[in-house]
Structures are given as structure tokens and as C-alpha cells.
Image (spheres, rainbow, N blue to C red):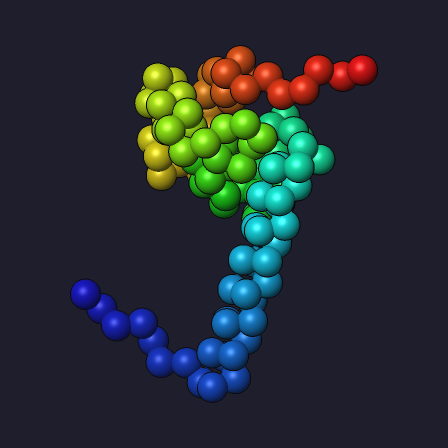
Length: 109
């Protein structure tokens, strides 16, 4: 295994700060999903432009949906044929459609 290139202290601090910011944005997105402020459809749309949403694992996103736990998320992904390591941006049209059917979300009033 090749060792990563050595970083200057400034570059290391910048990388750590960037990683912390991405973790914060990912946590906020998962919180919005849990509260129902962002739907699965909105997440699919965000994933096309936003790197944080696009690189979010599908399993993590599903587990963040209201009323969906680890077992239901994993079982549904297995039934659809989506790898547990798949990221939001990497989903195909048929996989997105199957997820929409499995998790329709709240109905509009």
C-alpha cells in the first residue's frame, strides 16, 4: 500500500477543516430527511448538483427517512438489488423509481 503524500501543516489543517464542513453538511441533510423537510425526490434532485447529497450513501439516506430503520432500509435495498455501498449520484433511473415506489413519502395536502 502506498503512503499518501506528505502534507504541509497548512494543507493538513485546510483538509481537516474541509472534511469537518462536509460532515456538518451531511449531518444537516440527514436531519432534514428525518424531519421530513426534504423528500426522497428532492434528495434525488439535489444529488445531481450537490456533491454532499450526491456522495451520500443510499443506505444512510434511507435510514434517515422517517419511519425507516436499518432493517427496512437494508431489506428494501436487497430486494431492489442496490449494493449497500451505492451512493445517491450512482443510482440508475430504474433504481430511483423502485425506491420512490418503496418509500412514497407523505402525500401533499
